Length: 105
Image (cartoon, rainbow, N blue to C red; front, side, top):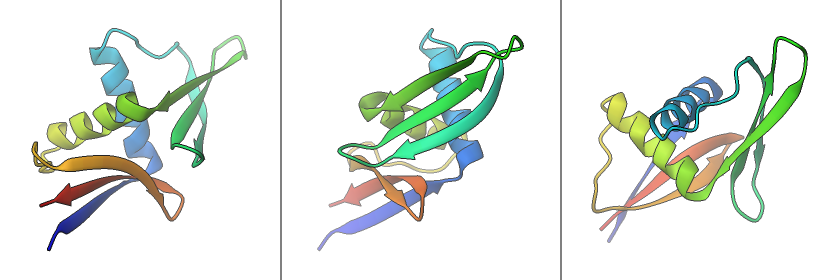
């Protein structure tokens, strides 16, 4: 028997997670306001943040795979949500939101 947990991120939490991760990894987001968030589900989960500068130019910043998972796991650790180190983790979507799926054995 195995146990599965899903931690569903609201859009605001996902944005905070990605901003903090990119800042820590030395790849901060371009300056400006986040003007959109798009989630694509195929073939893998991709999050695209649209950032509009003060000059009105829009830049789209994609995140997926290991970067997206690392950002979500780091956010969980920062907010004291337990994430077992030895578990299998994957990214999925649930009801239009990004979720961190954790499989415990």
